[in-house]
Length: 189
Image (tube, rainbow, N blue to C red; front, side, top):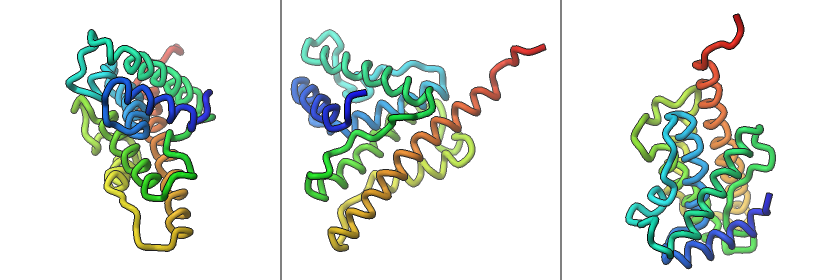
């Protein structure tokens, strides 16, 4: 798998070519949420329309973006279906100013919720196990802003949020996967 800094740069450049002002973090969050939505609903997402509702797939400026979205979707679906090893959030680099990193965490969470709930096929309360609690936490994180604490304290809090979001999004996927597995017909007699 390509490292997340390279992916961030790749997504950023592709968004610029398409003339969109989204962040790479928001796009990645949207894709991860859409993977869980697809698993929960069985409905395949239109990723291009999900990240840009006004996009016309016949418009050449969106062709590279559409291709990248589906590549990321397949890559991260494979990672999540195979236990999540190597899964990480695509966020601004640690060398970026703290407010940029906080914005990355917030926009990733916002994108994730958009992807998770985009087709209104279910509500947060219909997520299995603790999924609804995690999703509500992500709603709060989506509103995050840099605080007034020392930079060291803020960096520590940011690292904790990063890990919580990473694990929380994987848990929601696993809760849905477990729910779907229980609903599947038994193959034994």
